[in-house]
Every structure is written in structure tokens, then in C-alpha cells.
Image (cartoon, rainbow, N blue to C red; front, side):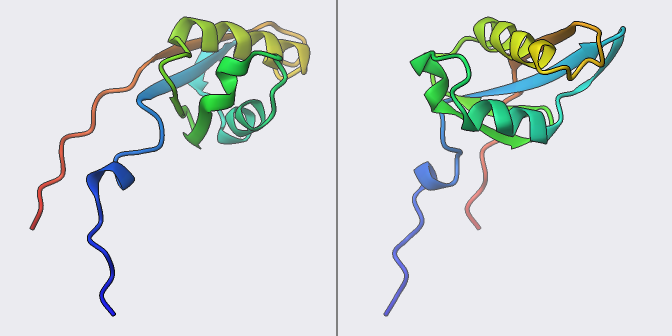
Length: 108
């Protein structure tokens, strides 16, 4: 029995838009920890259906549907992180931007 050929749609990622996400706490900017992104993406703390289509893929990296803009993601994540005390008493700012596109893979 042969395995079916792998389609490019199964290797390109889950959602159409990829974002890089940084947190700024006390003037220090760093990639948002995967644990924080995962908790935010896996639970619907915002009661907004648009965030149902989000997937944390690594520290500072998330995939989202076109229903989610980088600005809205940053605003909602910042509010959730600040309310959750992730800034140790300081407000948490979030910067989300489109991730650079990965170069297409060549078939060998």
C-alpha cells in the first residue's frame, strides 16, 4: 500500500495569515512566550468568534484567519495579558505584524 502524495495545502500551515507577536513590558521588547499565546488562542477569553481561528505555532508566532487583523489581535492579547498580571503590575503592550513569507519549498 502506497501513501498518498502529500499536497502543498497540508504543509503550508493551517491558517492564511501568519503573525509575529512581541510583548513590551517595562520598555523591554521580546517575542511573546508560546505558553501565553497558546493559552490565549486555545481559550475564548474575549467572547469574540474571530479568535476561534487562531493557532500559536511558536514563541512570538501565531497563525490566524483573515477575520483577525494584527491590530485587533494585539489589542485583545494586551488586555488579556495585563488583566492576567503577566506584566508584574506593569501594563503589557503587544506588537503584532505580518510575518515574512517563507520561501517556497522546492520539490526534489
